[in-house]
Image 1 (cartoon, rainbow, N blue to C red):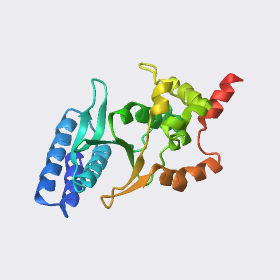
Image 2: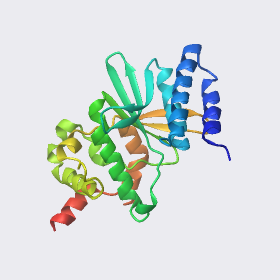
Image 3: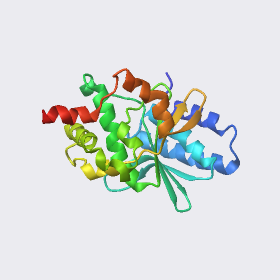
Length: 230
């Protein structure tokens, strides 16, 4: 089985096939950073491969890109992109669920997505999740509503707050953070072909999550709040 450096080299070579000299230089810089972080046991193979795929998509669009970028003393984002005064943050989600959440994987994934949106989106003009096409992100329906219009969704916000409090207590995620959290879109990744497809949040929800809602296969945070009240 290939090791981290072999996996990264293979993806890197595929990604470079249609890049110009400057783009290759930038991608090489990012590859070397990931290799150094791996030596310190700070990154993993599948996640790093996806970060490189995302990085290329922004490099070819004229953005400068950094990986594992420090936003604050406690926050490190996966992909940080700059273009003039514009900032985009992309968080890569592989769909991993730790063994301790074997009996509550959907709740864990929903809270993970919610908390990341709450923590990271204030640092960017646009905030995206990137995920492989074989994984469906558990994005709360509330995020389809602009933050300025969420006042009437108090039960949904309180339900999300209660759910987040089960997993994050130091520090907890506030109602205000949840009210202002944004997800501007989703980047679907085809790792096998080192390709990516950008979708708006509305299109992603319509294509994947709406069917899960109809089947009752998604957690509805407002029901959590209602049950708690009863």
